[in-house]
Length: 292
Image (cartoon, rainbow, N blue to C red; front, top):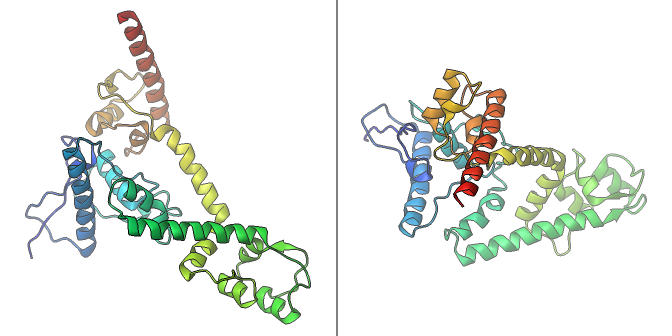
């Protein structure tokens, strides 16, 4: 087998997903995971090559959308001198990037991009609707003390039910799972698909953790989408060290979010960047008004 090495020169590459294309050259052998990283970049590059041919904007997933988004963002903001390995530890939103919810995260985007056909799209919507219906049922149905037979109640909960509770509250208990609810006669009628019930159970059991993770994503998104103009002069940002200025010049981040993830860039440096960006926008607006 030929030896290949995936490298991305972020200093000279155009910062879009088409630039995340591995180049083949003699080097040390890839591991099996290395082929997966290269293959993922190839799929994304192919998508964006097709979009470019149709005069459409490039697309790639966000860091909170997919591990592919983590990889592309890492390569753009940090670069690499060695074959890139997609370790889960690289992702700060691992609780959101679960295997069980990959379709919920990406199918809608895939359909909008033309990568998901109507048959698959219909099946996805049926599953998504079924998950929502069952979640709502578990929120709406209450179980009262004495409603279940004593032995059934003990088998399900390990104790007697002390007060009225929603089915969702019972499912949050560590010792209770969805099959146990169904065995106690508290499942949906007709029974839901195991894939649906499994997704419902994960969402309900870990709801608090998932909501906190989503709050962190929403907080970061405020800066993630703040665009840095192509002509932004990093050397004019007062207060930045020469080292940080050079990091920005080398990486050429497109957004404040990308800038914040460059190795060695501190929150203080991002604050200075935001202040200068505000001044830059004000100066540009003033120039436009004068020209008008």
